[in-house]
Amino acid sequence: MIYKTRLFARWARKEGLSDEALCQAVGEMFRGLFDTNLGGNLFKKRIARSGRGKRGGFRTIVATNLESRWLFVYGFAKNQRDNIEEDEEVALKKLAATLLKMSPEAVAKAIDADELIEVICDAQEEVQDTRCRS
Image (cartoon, rainbow, N blue to C red):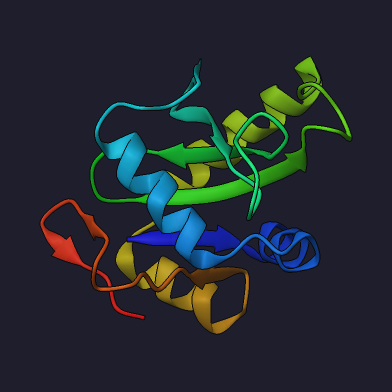
């Protein structure tokens, strides 16, 4: 399952970063195509800006077990900053650990509370063995 935190969702909406682009990014990551393994189940993944390449696009931070749970937790435009700070990385690793340990019931509660938003993918993009819907 693919999720985004409420703060990430707000940022992505403001930047025009679509769920389709997030689904494509997860598909690439599932195949081992990510930019940096930050450790602690945290990965940096570039996502192209619509109509442009990845170079001038977005940088996202994804918490994942690389199998069944993918959580977009942070994002920034390449033209706004180069990378995350060390203290941000530490905090995001703690967040990743918490999110990845959540039970299905806890995830459902987080969704009900609008803390997590499920990313619904187009049926053409297959992630793992599960097809997402649009």
